[in-house]
Length: 244
Image (cartoon, rainbow, N blue to C red):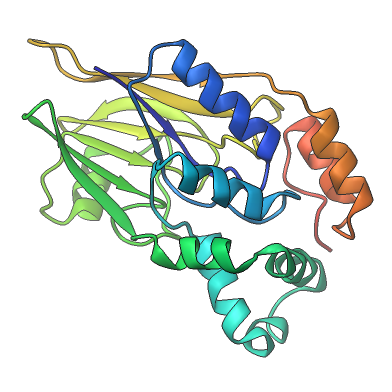
């Protein structure tokens, strides 16, 4: 069994389409999404539509939850945010049509599933603690056990940090998918994770970096009122110029 996990698409439709194609070419039987469909990129509604139409198992990310909250009470968010951050959030909210809003609002915070009648999968956005908590490659057995708080898992999948990795920690396979739309580690290629389950072997995983047609994304950013710094961020694989 080969499974693909994507996360943190952040409105990057061309990257999402490339990730789905790449995963299926490699033989992925099922694709999961660990949240943050929206924010930063110029195609948030289109990303929601594809995931909904293809019935990809998806959970909500912290930015998605922020979008839903800001749509309902925008004044509460504008007052406490930096102007650049608010500009991105406000612009994203304006692009979210009724179908996308309903889809985002319907997403659960986590997904649990038993794979191959044996392995317990837990997929979260940030960590089992919350969607805004983080799991980095340096996670220790002590740190992981504390975050799990007694929850038994064989495979823990997350995103949020945009830093991809896969390693065994405290008996569990821990997989951070990285970002399938907005990489931040200086490599402009997005990432996703493949997880392989074979009879008689423990689950294994590897990170896939892939190329995608970036011209359409960058053109859409230029034609929008999104902060100009996002053009460079998506081009270079960084996250440092989009907000003052």
